[in-house]
Image (cartoon, rainbow, N blue to C red; front, side):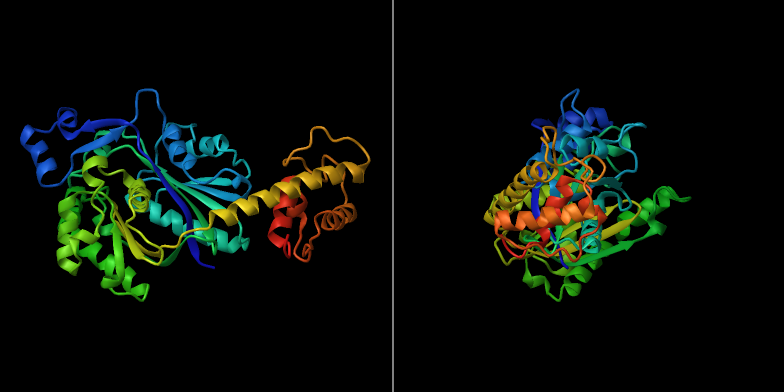
Length: 407
């Protein structure tokens, strides 16, 4: 089963802050600010307004996805972020986001292990989890984004100016969407700036950065059984413009094929760069069906990652039809349960527990499914049904939709 990106979206706060405005707060001289703009291509970043939270930021990206009507399919919610801690205990942003979106049945957790390249790791992990679940309709929601709240999170020594933005994607295993062709990650613990020789590691990180990132890009292209000329576009992490020019020179890639449009207007938004650049490229017609593209990331620690995808347009009509069919299944099951049990069920919902609350038995459940087949003129393969599928009205509807021979 192939990992696919079903839908990708981005969210940018409307508050714009120029590097000239940021300079004094970062302790930069006017000359250093000019270097950021003129040589590194960094012009402005986005910032949330006072009182807006990290969950607000992530929710903005998630709401931009085609999520409505598919909430019941989301099994996992992953928050990819560049730092291990983004809020004081016991605040848990990813759990709060899950609840706001009505995804209470999903398992939610954070992925931080690859620093600013964690979004790529999260996509790969989401695909692996879904493949292990073996439900072709199941989805994972991956979100990325962080608030800027520390000095080293505002400006790193290699001249990345951090902005606030968020990205999100829906991942499936074998569903419609952009197909993952390869994933390569190289972790270099000897370049960890938190190690015993932090300053020395940072110097080596900066010195070897171009070579290490270049090698990962080439390895991902090779693993996908492609050549650089086969790539229609490269979606970068937005460290700065000059570093990508160096990478392009080293591997012989035309710099025009790297989407650098967002660097001057967004800055570096840790793991969210991956999704922001994808959404930007699609909105501006930079990706056509059949195009192969590469997305890359690098994180302090140090990790260098790259993924190659084939862009495929998903079929929104098929999604709408599947959602409508499930709605009919839920509605019909609700009516049939009342008939089967011989009583009114005014408080019935998708979360109603069939055995614990309604007193349904296994034999009664099979009777319910047979009656459903007659009502909707379909046939359900019940060979793989188990206790988890019978837990609630919603889980039973999910099983029916996933195992029907054809509505």
